[in-house]
Length: 419
Image (cartoon, rainbow, N blue to C red; front, side, top):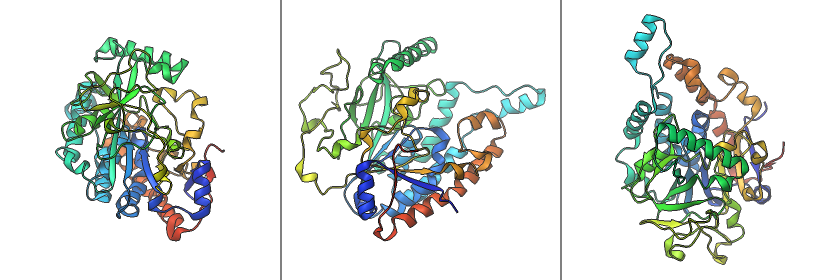
């Protein structure tokens, strides 16, 4: 039977896998992409990787997340990662934003069910997230090995600094038009803000796009997580997160849909640093003119650090469980196919993705996705059954990964970016 799991790797990662396989000590970071319910297909693989394979002592592993990826990575930082990731999937599957009374009235009258507004969806989502992670910020920030980094998108253009029905619509239209010209231009409208575990800086250069880092702490972890999951127009923006610049914060997937970052900067001895390792107010090369030198309390501008020769034997691979074989930079790049290509930034990335033929055998011949909310409408139970079946089938992904990494055997990976 054809494997359900594909292993793709950039050139440096592919050479290392071919030489000595993959061990927990090789892993420097794990990204978690935005993508809504598609991320559920990775749940059994997440549970094995975080709850078992990486669970022992070792060097810090950086967990980067945007949107559902942020919820996945936060769950992995809790003491029992296996159980908490299973709980995260349960919460996500059981999400239903439809008002029960409205559903009953619509059925009685034969009219379509009215969809809830962003305020109602935000209230429901906050309540569900709080039932899982509320009051647990200290646990997220004290894992002995994992370091959490939550990606958000902050409005910097006057139209997007505050949320408003018309101004947000016009603002995102402007961001879309700017992004058609270049991702750098979109930085004039929305910047990347990473809420980062202060114990260890992100080890990658983040000068590809306008942005900044703010310290992640008990005072802002929950709000940052809500913001990272707040899809524009579907949920409300999160305003004025403590310890960060004022403004409206949205889903981290807007600026960093699949977290196509410069992971290979660690191979060049370059990376990011917090305020203790750089000049105060240092300008990020990714920032647009006119934003240089700004620094708020608890934050540091993104920049590079000098070559560190002591990291020669340190972990250097990025293990990336993903639901598709391409790593798309921003949400507004989804239709721009030329931006889906693998780049040299991914040279040390090991991408774990489900095979297309295996996906075709899932319920509805596809991954769970956000369209299912509309397809199933008020049939919440029917949608939940289909999503649970898909997760059950994806146990194969975890089993196959466990078999491939067992015993330190060499792994012949596919080239990242090949057919």
